Each structure stands twice: as structure tokens, then as C-alpha cells.
Amino acid sequence: MSSELFFIYDSHCPWSYAATPLVKNIINAFPDMRLRLMHNAYYDGENHVNLSSINAVKDLSKVNFGQNYLDSLTDSKDSTLAANLLTWVQHKSNKHALSLLIAMQKAHFEEGNPLTDKDEVQYLIDELKLSPPAKALKIEKLTKDAEFAFHDITELQEVIGTNAIPALLIAHNEKLILLNHNLYLENPDKIVEAVEAELV
Image 1 (tube, one colour):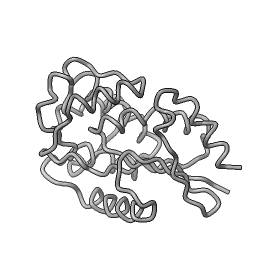
Image 2: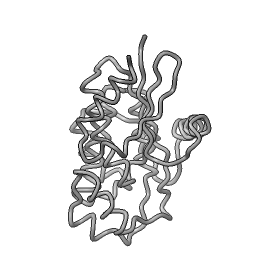
Image 3: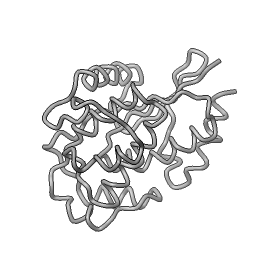
Image 4: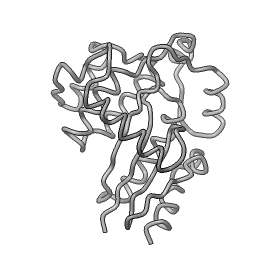
């Protein structure tokens, strides 16, 4: 029976950044598992990230935050362009979706790149040899595809009973299993054992 991994996240969310290594480890361990990256576009230009959240992420995970990012915490965060681009790549070039997410998170959280206009993401697109249409690089509003993805996320969140992000779920044998990712942020390799137990 085929299995799917759902990752509900926001590219600009520090906790999602901390959970991405778990996703990478699961996909590396189970290469036949289909990955569904679901960007929920929480950061809409009116949200900020506070230092206490960053410190909590640093205490519980192994991800790094660059000084340029830390210096920009008072700036509002906007993941609209990232949501549009990542939704497009999820649908049109799925094999590149996780690589692009990882590259975008590195650019944002380690290099301080806000990822809010085409010039700030073009080098990442070029590295992966992607050719997104102009609509996937919109900065002012979500594309129709990103809006549809958001509605899918809302329906899924109703099923699991939480709208918290990030969320990691596995669909297997007609079951939907919510993984407690918080247990593995400090030791991402351990998530593979947890997934193996669920797939029995």
C-alpha cells in the first residue's frame, strides 16, 4: 500500500524550518513515499517573529539562524511569493519541491533574505533549473493554485483537529496519522523509527 507524507508549513515560520529536517529524513528513508508539501501562507506581511520564539526553536532543534535574519526580526514577514512559488513547484515539478523549500529556508533564516520579490528568489530558481510562470512569482496576492492549496489545508486541519503549524501527517492504509514532530526536533534521525512503527 502506498503512503503519503503531508507537511503543513510556512516557509517563513521558524518552527516549520526546524521541522523540515524531519521531512528530509523521512523521504530519504522512504523514497517511495509521496510527499505533499502544503504551504499555508500564514505570514501575510502583517506578522512578526519574536526573539523568544527563535530562542525556543534554538533550544529544541539543531537549525541555525544567521545574524542578518536575527537583525530583521522587527521587520514584518511576508511569505506570499514563497507560497505561490512553492505551490507551483509542488504541482509542476514535485521532485524539486523539497530541495526548493530547503534552499529558501536557508536563504531566509541563515542569510536573512526576505524572499519577497522575484530578484530575491531568482538565484534559487536558477540553481534548480526551474522555469516558473510569472504568476508563480506574484508578490501581492496568492495565486489560484495557492488559494486552492490553502482550502485543502483547512479541510485537512479540520480532520486532525488543529490548525497549528507545522504539522506532519502520514496517510497509510486508509489511516491518517499525526506525527508528534516536537519529540524529534533535537534528534531528527529518530523520526524514521517512529514512521517505521506506524507503517507496520
